[in-house]
Length: 301
Image 1 (cartoon, one colour):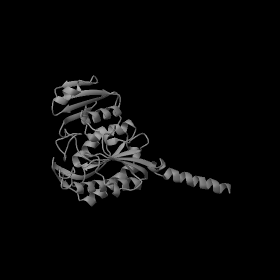
Image 2 (tube, helix red, strand yellow):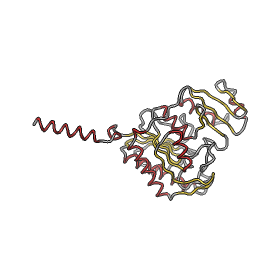
Image 3 (cartoon, one colour):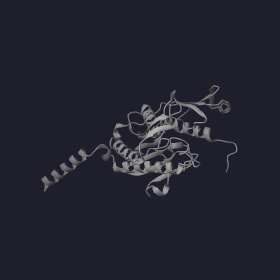
Image 4 (cartoon, helix red, strand yellow):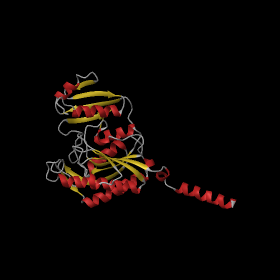
């Protein structure tokens, strides 16, 4: 009986040692931040807002890409998933098509912007439907937070796209970004900032408003595959943690925003179009950016 007990213990130990690291760590809690400009088939404003004639179709594509990411995450062991609807009005995902056991962050403003709800309890972050940044000469609908108002955003001197800002917010909480989907320029740009993460290229840009695109079903299959692959090698990734204090530089396309913001004692005007804010951490950076882009004296209610 004793020898059987020892043998069983040995088998259990062998089974544990043979289990992949991602499985040994237990259930995954996964954060999905979803934008729309990088979604399959999306190329112009006709898909990006309620007034566009293809917006309802693009909402479907966006929702299906998120569903594909959910399937991939679950195949790798995820048991809790939070999704941030992070495009436009923040009310794009079709809730009645999502699983009943996920939760969704909707609408604005939010202190952590496209990463609202993330904290230290998450194992990984995934970016779906992302686009390139405003300084990138390539990429469909390339911009950073506001295509109409901003010319550049820098963190500690480095120009960053939305994916870089959001990865740094995740990194503040010790959460690595492990996968990104979008056009070829967006995937390459996020990888340049974050590292060699998994990527799903669902279209290849020709210009700001043109691309060669996969068909939706092919894009969904690719996203599901890349998300699962990322979470199965979770230990290969590290959070993006910036040195503190964090210097935020913002360059506007017009001069008046920098002039008015410099009235605040925490803001330095560095040239006619630019300001600088030095923050204790990425939470403060995020709150400043959200305030900067959304405050108006006539806000109601």
